[in-house]
Image: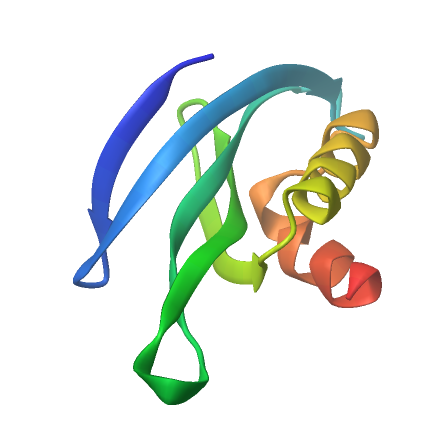
Length: 102
């Protein structure tokens, strides 16, 4: 797995590459999507912070979608990432799938 540190919206986020999938669009165009877990910190009560997990989907040569702070559970983010990759979800559909998942 590839591990990168990025700055996103003035927040330090770590990015963990999970894998890629190739999908064929309705018009026959081939799309390749890269999937990453983004790791950051989420403020909680009492001035404390805990590790949080989100997702990033990037189409090679195209759009990128990032949704941080979805959960503090590593197991839950693994389940979501498996769902996204199994269904070859691209950046355009990420928000809808995540909203249904939540």
